[in-house]
Length: 192
Image (cartoon, rainbow, N blue to C red; front, side, top):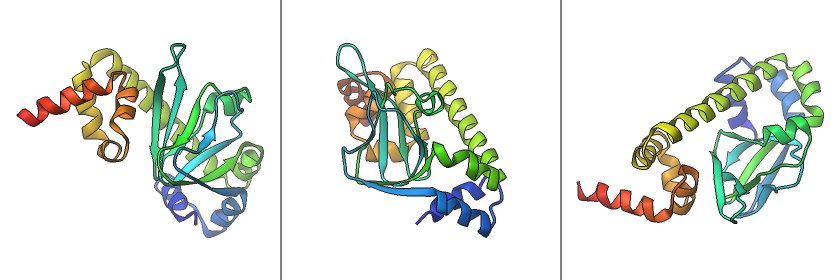
């Protein structure tokens, strides 16, 4: 059930069969229907979530009622509200399945114990958080230095799986513009 997670971990650190068994016993598995929430605003995040199957979005609702997507996650990606998890305070985000999905859940309450028993897991999680932070910084750089059209083309080239699986209006929300703007960009591209 968790083989894709173990394979992902082994891309970064060695993982023995015994360590897999320890981690396996600490994980929970959850299936979600399309549009079902993994986390809702004002709930406190209690776990890290590894996507085994499916697609998720993390978003917040602006004061004007508009949803602003800040992250997508597909198979072999982690999705978590790290601030809520670390500080144990209510989340400002929703995490919702875009399609039928499954996650491996590593609860906060067992994480330290598991990392003590499987020290390489601590290194793996640090590397994953570092990469997520670097991606977030890169995304901010693109928002402030690329035009809307450049952002769309970069996103499409870097993450073709998302463009295929995620509704256009969600891609537009993530990139910070309207679905009509995405249609216009796609229309111009088709004319070339």
